[in-house]
Image 1: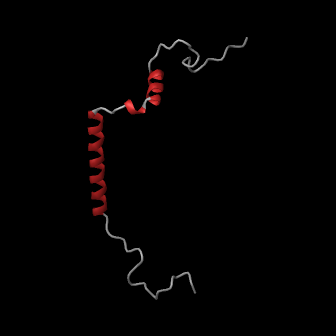
Image 2: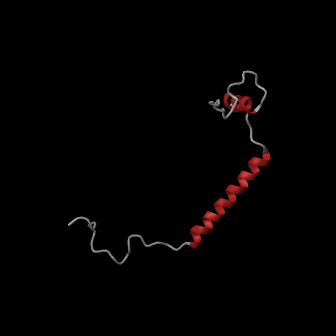
Image 3: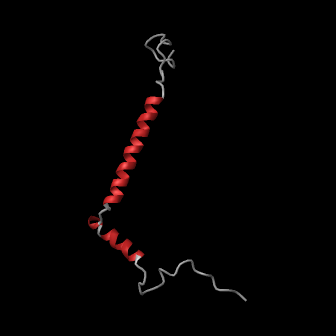
Length: 83
């Protein structure tokens, strides 16, 4: 005897909306101008960005300068690929 295949979610098959998450997502999508982040969240993100910038600056200052073109290897003005 064969069994019926189980569905992963019944959310799309239900006509009466009992949950709020999907409705809220749709409302957020339809009204992007009414959505404002909380002060706590924005302050947390601002602090994270400051910390990230400070770490990046510290890494850049800690790293030594790279001599990419080599100041002592100049043969002339022509690039090495040209003969």
